[in-house]
Amino acid sequence: MSQLFGHTRDTVNQRYALRTPEGYVPSCLPAWRNCTVVIHISPGMGAKFAQWQVTFAPNGQGRGTTVANEYVVYLLEGRCSVVLSGKTNALTAGSFVYLPPDTEFHFKQPSAGRLTSL
Image (cartoon, rainbow, N blue to C red; front, top):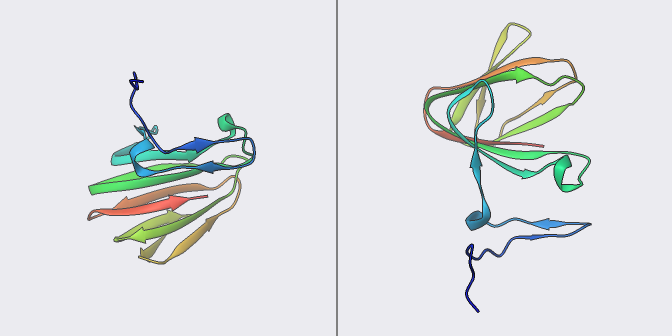
């Protein structure tokens, strides 16, 4: 049988999701530039949280506000800085930052790197 729209090993069930790189769909977020965003898990899939991964190109950046949500951001590789409450904090691979509700943030990436948020 021919796969009309392609094939992936991704599986999304009521209680879990197995996501594989060939199933990643790059998208864009407002106010994020020079980066690729992949939404892994979202409330639209039935979860009560969201998980996404951002891969920065050189000079990539992203800004926003957490509104009523809270974020935990982990830097997988590279380096970047995050501005919170007017203070700049440097992050290196293995670093993480907690963003409480109603927090404005601005991630700046001077070189290529990758972060994930949960």
